[in-house]
Length: 599
Image (cartoon, rainbow, N blue to C red; front, side):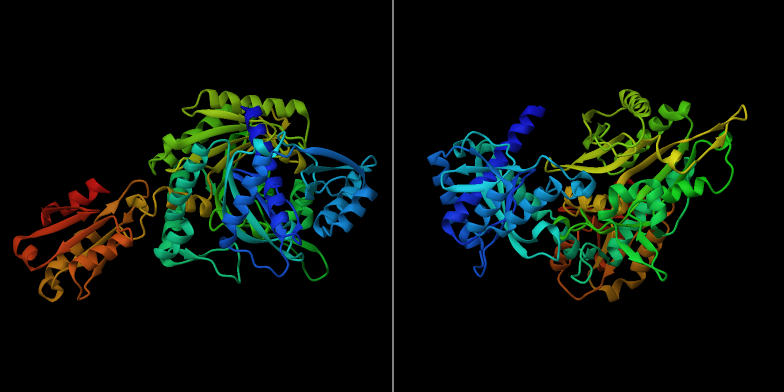
């Protein structure tokens, strides 16, 4: 399976070369930037100068790609000294490739995470370029044999993207291409993509007046009343359930000094993704991208005993991450979000039971959305940049694996994908279109408590260091809401729908007293599952419009239940109940039972 994925990535990376070769042939003055493989294909960033490329160019580019593919140019490796490569890129007027080359010369890498003077390489005087026909491009390699081996492809979209994701750099044109081994797989993807566009949470969020985004705060949602109700209901559900399970809710500063992040290790591993500022007196501060260090300080607030363990400290503080503009995607990738977070401090002999309890919570939390069969777990193991000793890592991975083996979930393994301080279980959700999303995570951490010198007094009076479990079940609530909106195409489960019932009147003046009687029944219905004391959310449409128009408006608004009431209903003590396209008539005395049964 791993080899298959590697081959697919190489094929798609080769497709990016094919796209660049076709574009360069059609637009000889174009300047090339980067073109990586992505989940469904690849993209390439270009500088077209004054020319404004559009969808009208897609057919022409695809045709040229197909022509080059049929010619079957091979990938020929060319090795050059850095100086010769610089000369070549200057002669061919490729400033973006030249910029990448200068980073290779200075740091031995073009990857941001590896750009550190301490990591400067001494043996990087030779670089590689690859030639296919007349096309030559700076590249470290990883291709199929020739253009002929690139699979079926289709240009899907274009977008603006800053060079290397920095607003300080020029804005380039990014061309996205779907690419699969066969035409059948490409067709299947295109069909699913069309369905996904209809379910796009950004589109539905505006149509249902749940949330929107504004250019003055890219990556941070404006929550409208209906959308905020959904988010608050999730928090109420989370809060009530965890209180019953012995969790204690906390809150901590949203902005902290650099010294806290240095102590936790996040500054070395995460500082590029943090919003940083300087307070008066020139001290460096940062908005928190995660809650872990604050939870450590709360544990250290006072002497702790083994009797307090497990100590489960939960919170929903706002978190902030400086994502690059090109990575932002509605609620699915934001710069500000909250998590259903908790840090559970335990002893070593509590590991498996605690993980089992958390997996039971996971099962229930997805069950209330009817999604428990859509969940798959992954055990993510020790990464290359791990912190701590291998023995502790092995112990942690063993504890997680044992808990997974005894859980109700199917699971896989993601090698070297753990957090730098510990292995983790990632919670993935497959939606109605078969797409897999990462939501929550359960991370076992032997390292961070040591960095904060945490300890508790054990039964024998000795001092022990606790183990901490970092866990979120839904993950980012923003992201989870976006996924759920797309999965259900906006038709949310009844308990979390912002408007659950809409009463549609026929001749409202004649039935005002009957409406009050119906309202009185609705007001006294409380849904106890999964949120306690969750009163019904309903509205009344008294507008002087046709009934068909009122029904259509309610359907567009994704209202689960419509109650249709007119003079005849008043006389008969009845109500017409409409759920989607099905309509039935009930007696008013049956209304409470009907709502409770169909919720």
